[in-house]
Length: 123
Image (tube, rainbow, N blue to C red):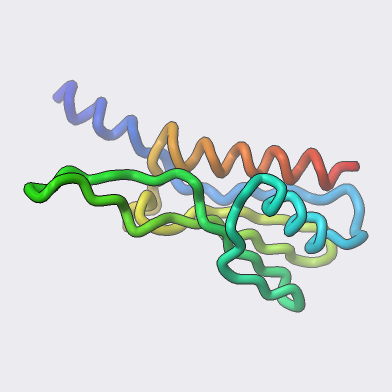
C-alpha cells in the first residue's frame, strides 16, 4: 500500500499553465526569443496561429535486458491566443494517457519555462 502511494506521488496532473502578457506588442517574437535563449530546440513554429512546439530537455531512460534505452522525447506547446494570452502544456513520453506528468522532472521544467516567459513578457 505504501509503495503504491509513493509511486503515485511521482505523477502530477498535466495542468496547462496560462498567463497574460503585460503588452500586446510582439508577444510571439518575444516567446521565440526566450525559448531560444534557454536552449530549447524549436520543433514547430506557426506564427500566424500563435503556435510553437519545443523539445523538452528532460529525458528519461528505461532499463531493458539489452541495456538502457532513452525515451522518445517530450515537448511543450506554447499557444498565444488573442493578443496576450499565453498557454503552455507538456506532451510526449513523460505524459501519461491519464493526463498526468512526471513530477520533479517535466512538470518542473515546464514551470521554469513558464516563469521565465512570464517574467520577460511582463516587461
